[in-house]
Image 1: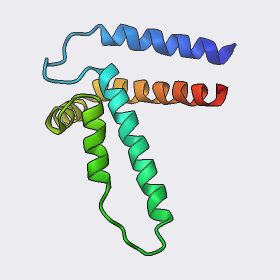
Image 2: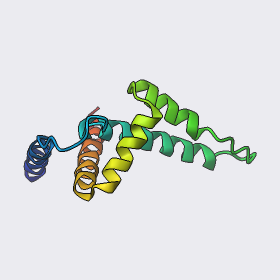
Image 3: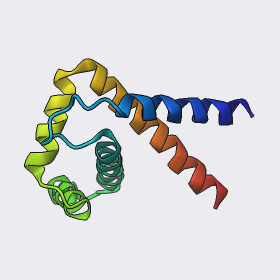
Length: 116
């Protein structure tokens, strides 16, 4: 019950903060950016696990094509992503909102996986 209340409050906070229209038009919105970043983190995790099992030490650089696949799935360019990421890095309040939103999204995805 408490956990559900926390999720509702977190969602309400994100909703209120996302109403701020101070971000430039070329910056991906927090709701888009969090999903892209989540998928990039999953790609990183997959790549890291693959390297651990690479007994022949053939550490082929496969993470860049994985990122390109994530960009293609979300229909964005590498430039759009990195321009947006640099904007969020330069604006600590917006960056905190993004990271909090990403964490909340990751927790929701984890709960969906557990319920299956």
